Length: 540
Image (cartoon, rainbow, N blue to C red; front, side, top):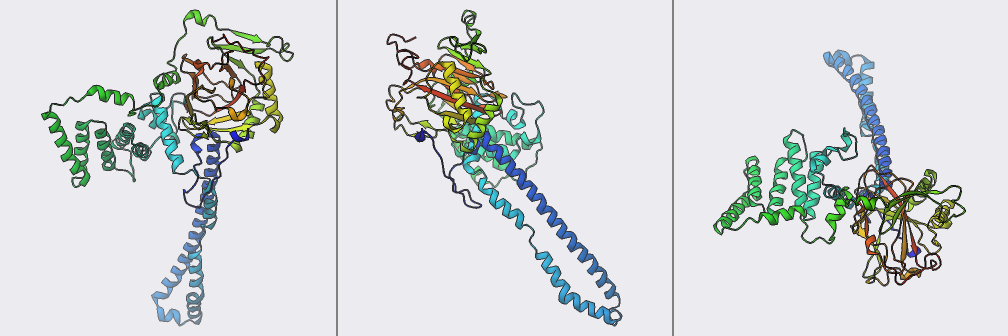
């Protein structure tokens, strides 16, 4: 199991972003720590402000006293200084007290705050984290078909009807999202977010950082890159109304006008259909995921609906696994989620207390989740798996051992050859796109290093409820399983013949709202010979 666990050493330099990618956005569990870091810094900042205010009050008292003395003396200088006490005090003030005042003014009360900021900054996210969080928002936008206004206003499906100020995107936020998309050569999302920034600006929102000229510059180029010359020209003209001397816009104006006239002379078809397809694919020319539309439809709850006849074959029942001693008196609540392949859910399997202990054990060890490269077999991170995970062995805590034994009692499978319990926490837009849990024929070395055969079955325990999103969907059959805290779903990845069941291709939908914790247990073929007998003719 050691080879399946990865740790990363993060080297941070003060006030720099030169670091290994910490991937804060991939785990809500880790991001909660950032809230407390910021809270501590705000408290430290307030202490600094109070110290500065106290310092200014002391200086003000000095100024008031000295002003009164100098005013009194300046009315009759000779008479004032004729009094020996006044003469002494003037010399004393200028020689000693003004030096004390200078020392007070030069006193730096920011040391404590700067020192705290320096220490805490080592835990800050970096540029990669910010980019990752921005892309996660756009992923949610695409998967759940959300418009920019919905996201910007903070009124996400599943959230309260009234968004708080902290969950609303400003003009600068929308502009920054557009810039991230632009840097990724994603002109589709560049246009959407720059248009939203412009809309909020025109509605009266103030910004000291972003102006309409900068936004229109991005807008004109992004729509041009999508083949919309007339709109690119319109945005350019609008920009030039605000800044007639804008060098790039003047050059673009001539170029766009030339291209349009050339297009009309050649009577070139605008190819509206091609642009429509471009928009539908969100600017992706070659999508590596062939079933993306099906995957996203399932995530939105638009999946396959079973016929009433098939639905009638799904049951809820009390299950004792063939009168297993542990379940005779207290049978389990079992529910059929799908008929073929058979996917079942067990309700109220693990207590809240035990789930919290598992999270507590996993949290300090959460690392960016990896996948096995099908070509090299090397574990590596991938953009289609956005979460953090940790591995827990049965020997590490009685609760982990207890969960393992419970899985064995329920499934009837030997867990001694299973992988350690994998705990995963999904962050902003966290997901795992469609994949197989078992090794296919074109991956002969997938689990060779374990020496326990292929993954025969999957046990997936939901350790949190999710407000919106986060379903487990099976793209080949159209099934969607919603997260429910304390319940677990179970299915076989292999037929009794040992062949892979390709119908079990599944995915973890992006978490739209909330915090998703799960734990997985993958049972392997070795040790199951007398628990699930092999049948070479069984492929159904």
